Amino acid sequence: MLQTKPLGNDGPSVGRLGYGAMVLEGYHGASDDGQAIETIRHALDAGLTMIDSADAYGNGHNELLVGRAIEGRRNQAFVATKFGIVFDDEEAGTDLPTGWGFSLRINGKPAYVRKALAASLERLGVDVIDLWYAHYPDPATPIEETVDAMADAVRSGQVRYLGLSNVTVEQVRRAHAVHPITAVQYEYSLWRREAEKNLLPTLRELGIALVGWSPLGSGLLTGTVGVLDKDDFRQHNPRYAGENLAKNRDRFAPLMRIANELDVTPAQLALAWLLHQGDDVFPIPGTHRPERIDENARAAEIRLNDETLEQIDEVARPGLAEGATLV
Ligand SMILES: NC(=O)c1ccc[n+]([C@@H]2O[C@H](COP(=O)([O-])OP(=O)(O)OC[C@H]3O[C@@H](n4cnc5c(N)ncnc54)[C@H](OP(=O)(O)O)[C@@H]3O)[C@@H](O)[C@H]2O)c1
Image (cartoon, rainbow, N blue to C red):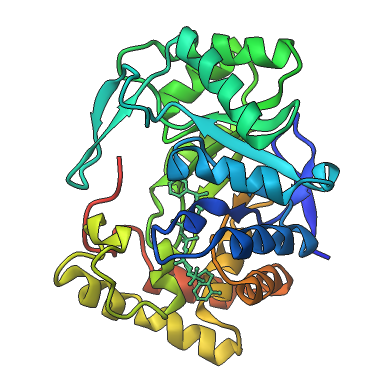
């Protein structure tokens, strides 16, 4: 069974890898609801107990899927979800340009926080959410106000632990002063390493876990991404657009060779490297395929020696990837 570690200073022990459920919404290829539910259940069986969702994934559909998957198994799952990206046209919000050719609408006002919580609990079919993140800070609302409203949900017993996503160091400090933050979610992988510079040291100082999103570079680090379908959401990602896809494939090819030499898959190497960055780093890979959940879980058994870690560090140095990241 997958090893567990405590999530931050105040959190419970959860599997070293979580399961990212966003992929089940057709962003990188379709899956039907029945298969999606089976995939989530397979993640639980494999010890990937932290199931990562968001109200905005599939405009609420993803939380419904998670809710159905954990029916009768509530105690085995550590349900993590997010709010703050507005997906209902009737709701107000502040535009946040992403750098990917579209804007997100964000709302972190207390009234919206309360409304989003009630809707997520309903869709998930649970009385309590284990970990509840603000998906993005609202540019029009001080983070203290958003977190104070989130803390009300902890005080009322509807949420166990609080998280933030896509935040700066300064925002983490301000939020943590209002209510303890258990986990911060940020993109972290061999092709986006900026968290190492300031964010991770700050989280360590404050006793907050880093949950690494897109730990496989949305697939590129697995060596299996070919030509993208025209409706594949990764078309929006500048790292996959035009010539950048081929450039990035070439730049990260040395990792495929290292994986081959170690007799592990590139996906396992990418995840094992993340797990070697500290017991407080929790990657949440996504996949539609149960057999890949097993493959990914085995990454936790891989021991990389110092020489290999140095080699990886050299071939996948920070800043190597071509193309802008999401805000
Ligand atoms: N907080 C945020 O703003 C934010 C943003 C983005 C993502 N996230 C979270 O992070 C999670 C993961 O991100 P992600 O899905 O974008 O990227 P990812 O986990 O880096 O990559 C997922 C892709 O890799 C493929 N894959 C997975 N395991 C594989 C393996 N062993 N071999 C080959 N291919 C493999 C999957 O394809 P198949 O399905 O075909 O296996 C899928 O296309 C999301 O589900 C979401 O929960 C959060």
